[in-house]
Image: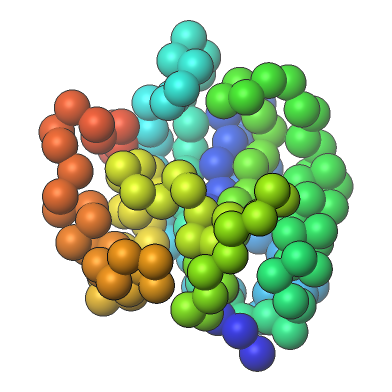
Length: 161
């Protein structure tokens, strides 16, 4: 079984409810889920929208990376995600951040996820789960990446749970 780290975010409607539902559904193929605290964060990219709730989870899966991506997209749909535009509001967004120590870069899938570097709302929850976790692409730990962020690039407002 592979160890995976997933990032979850929502900023539409009952965001915490959407995250809880996604974690419940993910449990069908991601086992032994450990969930990081939830953080309220400022929107990045398209900033004229509501704040997000973000968290991360760690679990184990038998799915191969492409199968995990397909499963995650199905969970997003089942939770109620309606696609709008890039960086737009969403009921739920689930990204595969790490899959063991694999490095994948295809048109459909990037592992480690490209949003890892420079985004505290991805790094902080993963750091809560395992600060010594190394990015296989750079060799840096998630704590090193988080500590290296400039204050101006930080988007976390508060921990909400």
